[in-house]
Image (cartoon, rainbow, N blue to C red; front, side, top):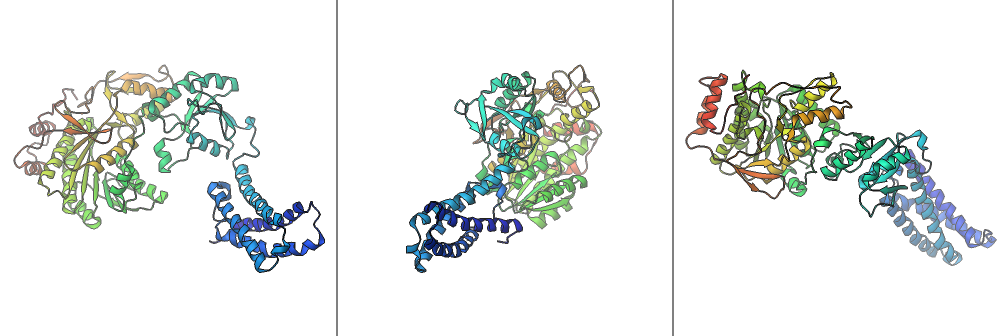
Length: 613
């Protein structure tokens, strides 16, 4: 180990402590009056034992740790090192024939004194760094009440003590076993429902919800209690963000829409996913999009050998590639630009990197935009790219191909949804042709909070401009989930799938879009009297309600509580794929009405919306 200046200073301190403790041990043994005949033995002890302890400390790696983060692991190393010295030094004394002259009490006291001086120095430095020795007064910090007294709260307190912005005034937790006890000197004064009286008594105007592992209902109740007490509420990052290492628990933030509409944390089969991705090459199309990028982040957690980012947009590809470069993950990242419909480019990338697992997330997904003048392009992109990438996966020996689909493919009422349903049918047809080497799996889910083109960024822009916030219909509803949750469940379904299944994600309860708008206005610090909500009417291809499953479908349970398998009709007999290829290459009528008519031939459940453009 290379010693830095600080490490050398620490070594010098420990060696000096070894010297001083011999002197102190003799002083204590002889009531602070060392007889003249003992000075010779003391000199020998200092000359022999002091360098011996220095060598032992180096051998035990005491100077590889960072003092400010000293932990129980470092203290154990100190105990073992001093204990070994307490055995070696008397052995050396016996070899030098001075053991009989050294008082037995000194040989016992000296290691104990040394253990105290060496260990206490580490603890004192960490306490000083964290403000544990000389905390700033509450007048210099903003007092807060922390809701939750678990591991997150303990980490939050430790990290807050290192900076001068916040000062914990009290802790609250519903667990009776924790109430009345302390964390780092701060008392758990009662249950969450007491947040109002406690904040009032202490003159606190701010609260932090430190419950990342709690259920959504528990976090929402904590938020409501704080809002009812008139407190400015913040929260620690989500459980996933903390586990992934992207953020620290001290990165408290304003409560966001995900926290209000969020759901319970997804429980993943970590060991299964590690075995699924570990050491393999994984390719993601649409890697620069909101879903594709999150898929890449989640996949990287499970140690793939190589992650191929395939994306058409140069800027989006650059952004995600730079993100991975900045994070310096132990994964080889390949940025491949190209159009997923381009058979030659896709074939070239597959032949070069031979991905074993493929996630196809590239798609056009904006419903009204794809309904009229862009109808055929929606089908050509969403279906054509699926065929190109799926065939390349099969031709190059990929074990798994996962199509990211949508709930709009269920009883589709628009071209975008019908195109995704047709892509699903194409994957099932390819599975029927396959020899089993490549498994084609489909995953459907609904709207994702904050994804590109979704309603949430649109509402944010409108609120920032002062309104109005436009909602198409006062009764329109959609299913929502967070981007990380959607990506996690797509990975889990991909790992579980054995070919031809359509996995349906549990989207929870539907949310009225007008309620979503009201919550966003409130989170932005406004009232509806400040930001008006305006109803504009349904757009082309829009439904009032989205369905998680088609009416004629039934579902099968899976080992994962948030995943079910939809039982759908299989592709029709005949040369379906040949007819599809011929139509994509040269449609008889590429106009919107012609596209709708052809889609209805293949998808009987497709009922075009009667909403006028």
